Length: 227
Image (cartoon, rainbow, N blue to C red; front, top):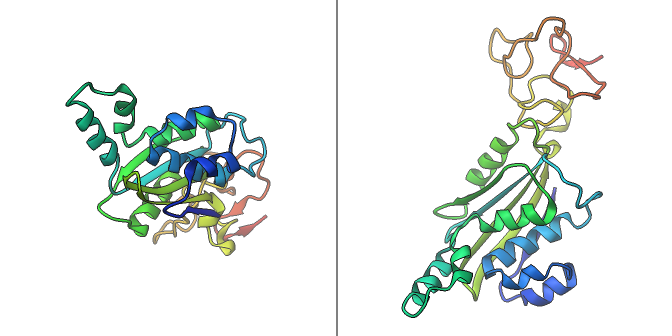
């Protein structure tokens, strides 16, 4: 898992020049969007095939204030002439769209407004994102920007393996299978011979467990070990 943080008071334009430098649209973004964009850039800059389109990465952004700062600025502009440049950033999910467009992500993109920074609630949403079998990694960020001069910005790039205990990686019952899953589900009583949290095998699959295509280590659910 990779983690990054942008301290309050950082010169965001200078950070952009150091970390990115080739996306002029950055200068049209509001502060919250700049923060989320930069967090994402810092997390994925080492990815191989960086700009190859992909559907296996979700983008989740969390905050407390949402787009409140821009809402206030837009409301203020309405006293004279409403600014279209401000209006586009009055949507809390704008930042997830910017990240997805920049990186050619076609997986889930979601924005959440929470009452406060809540690691358990954030983790719950990350785990939920992995239930889509296509999802193999999640780019998650807490970006709270109540004003242009006050913010908290941190991010995490989480691979599905980060949420599976090492001793369970090749066992049965992964929520999305080895092809896209995390979140080991234990067998309920009476389910000890079935994979994937109680889902029965299809005909002819009684000895294999939930592996994606091309993953040669199949499980014996009875014995809970590799072939």
